[in-house]
Image (cartoon, rainbow, N blue to C red; front, side, top):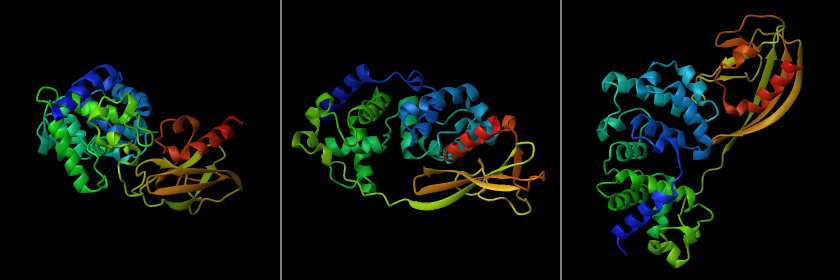
Length: 336
């Protein structure tokens, strides 16, 4: 069967099966760009409320470029991988300064923007600008490996190169963006990692793995390295007014976000120090095992890089979701 037959089958299926998503009702490259950045390491259903709130707060590239980085991080709070938000804002500044406020349609110029790689560029160029540029992410790599019955490790450059060429061969001149989205949707709804729904798939008749009965064996993927475990103390340090001491992170991981310090800073005396709970948070390569301490201190100035936050101040601080369990403990203390 031909690529043309597969193209037709995928596009016909997409017209009727696609989800109603807010960024599918526009060709605005900013909205499409934002949706693709949010979708990295985040499920579509989880990102939708964030997309709605973020675009309400920063409705244009100009609004995002003019925003304070902390405000952007606060709007991103809960999505994780905060470098995505920092790069998004940096790229918006570049768009305003170097491209007259318009997201560039030139592939080379688009890829030079911070945080935009080949996949994101392909999605923007095909969906927003109607260009035949493939967008190949994990979903598309899986779809390609199964339909083409390709046993190459999908983490290798060779597999990505073959997938890009295959996607390009499927793209019709008049609807390249729809093909990009059809392949994304197929991977998200039917061509699932552990349990592909082949009986419902519009590509089943074209799929080498399905026809050979080996869809669940593909794609071939190198196992991830085990996550490094780090023991991470968490200090909920309260002053006589009930304010909590917060530290702004300077480390690469979660840089710029506020956290509970790991220990009382030098020069801050303690009146009490009690255990208050444990929690765990998993990042891509690190697993934090956290042990909390609830501490009291007399009135002292906040050390450099720290601040005393009242309940009212706390609501405006951008915090990593890693500390969610300790935020609940803190609110219990405040409300008690």
